[in-house]
Length: 201
Picture (cartoon, helix red, strand yellow):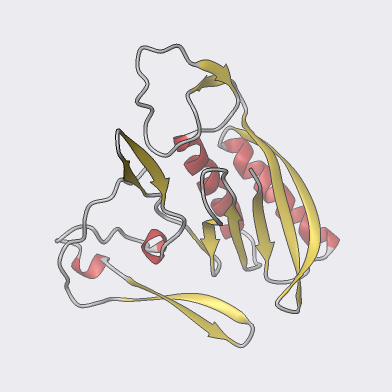
């Protein structure tokens, strides 16, 4: 599964080494390994350094039931032992990567392209790391299909807004483009009714 980090500029070789080292250290602390490639791309007429993380694995083998959001419902069935990531593993890996990027002085965005997602799965936008990794069930007749939230605005809020008591802890998400930079801003809204509760890892 492709996993990309795009910086808002072309980094020098020394800066790129620092970025790669920071990501390697943080995902290593989280119990993961990955091969990190680097390249420079042109996006919206600007150059950007991009890190491509591939062959992402857990450092130690563990029981694996498949790549799907939510807990495994297959009980009493032997599971193969591999280093592949599943639900909670990917969330932990995404958060470790964001933590590494938070410690760098260059703005960045990050996304992945899971085979079970149509389009990009956003992990970091406007230099803000994703906070929640919700999913929902989609009725498919005799069975439910689990679908990831690909990165709607509420997934980047610093506090969940699915609580009637949230009040000042709730924030409104807004993108603002100033010059060549996209930034994320928050504003406290008026009290509003509780939203449906979504699962949060």
